[in-house]
Image 1 (cartoon, rainbow, N blue to C red):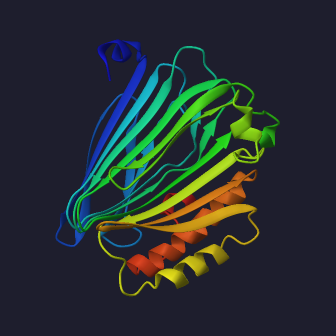
Image 2 (image 1 turned 90 degrees about the horizontal axis):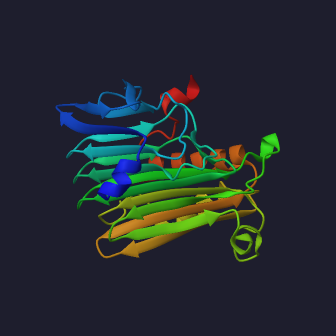
Length: 285
């Protein structure tokens, strides 16, 4: 960030988490500045898997706000990160609001990045950036669900824009501006075709898929879980030394798309990690 841009930040917040494997336990250390905190660390799946719950007390971002989240998952650790509520980019005319997440996952470690949905209010100017770096032998599951406007409340996405940036350096990049003025993208048949909810789930591993997972069967079973969702697809991407599975969904019912991603995530957890497919503990409270 340039000095000029840094000077424009009105309410910055930073949170750094480090997950360390100590014997049978994954321990989480945190450092923070500003209104962004580690609310609690839970262990409902045993001591080796730490579920970290992040909270931003202001409840949303307006122009000039910036949230920086850094995740460092050390060898052998398993860190799941989630939030108790949606991330909201509110209407503002005071410059861009930014949430930037950077993560590094070491060999033999696992990361699950599972925030609640992101809501882009009409009139927002936002940047939602996620960069996930995998060392050899690491793996992760990450999800992002975005709602443009508040259709359930009759508030359409009529003005504003949001940058969605999801990157696994050297493996995959999904980046684009969603601008309310870009009707060709939002309403055209080669774009969102009038839909206002987008959802992405990615599994990445810097090693071949485990022998217990037959890729073709896994894809077929994953797609079956999305039956009834109009625009949904799952793809396998192979890169040198890496495997990726991508689920992409577009629709209008945020809850339905969210539940669809959760079903697929549960299946991937069971087949690829031999772990139960349940949701994070905080989602059930």
